[in-house]
Length: 368
Image (tube, rainbow, N blue to C red; front, side, top):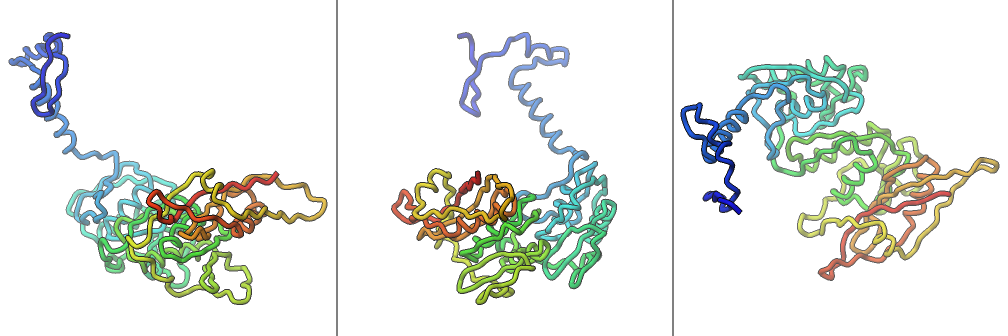
């Protein structure tokens, strides 16, 4: 098999290289042995890792802490979404909602250290303004919105670093959503704060982009949820421990009220098992009662066909916690699918340890 060298540091062996390959370095005044090649490559990699790359933005620390404001700033034709995510960290904003209309554009910006927090904010505001956007705050919620929208009631433009509220690090949760539907976002938050059982109307449209550079408090996360609902013409209503998210234009049935106070506190972590995602066939096998959808159409209209994917979550008793449209078809089909699925009944899921489980999954409703 030929001569083999052994790496004493890593404990493995490898075939000896051709002597001609590593003796080509004799014109450097030395013989390039395998160890010398390793030393040379290691030195080069260290030098390259310490160099400043101007073709990508600084993305901040990976452990959830905020970078220091006085660090240098370098963007070279960076995407606006990357610029927003980075600069919101640098000025001390824990979480920011981003309007999808402001996600187009690029930023080129270079600034050597030291940079004060106010200078950092000025550069942030200027970069947004050049792309037709602005940073605003409503209560404790920060948003990036189009300049053309203007300032509504209770909304202020952020131009001074003193207007940025301090936050408590590592208290709460860190959330990042990249263009998910409002329905899916509401399902996540409702589950997080035990605002269940809840049915989310298929009439709620829109998307959510949220960057959280550090852990945010429960109160701030709930305020973000309320802002998302308001921005998308929706409201949270409740009746006798049940909840729904519906359009603000919807008339409320007797006994239902708009929820404006804080949701009930969630169970302490560790006391409630995490939801397990199950495959559609496993979910189907636990259905006890299935109600077929009823599609109401006027006489003479062509029959509508399509497929609606509904997301559901069950508690330990097999009861529906969350029902929402995961993949829509068209409004009449979406509404019929939700009305049917929220009447389904399931037998509880039992884990391998013999204890009941909380699960989530998808069911497909086909209209043909």
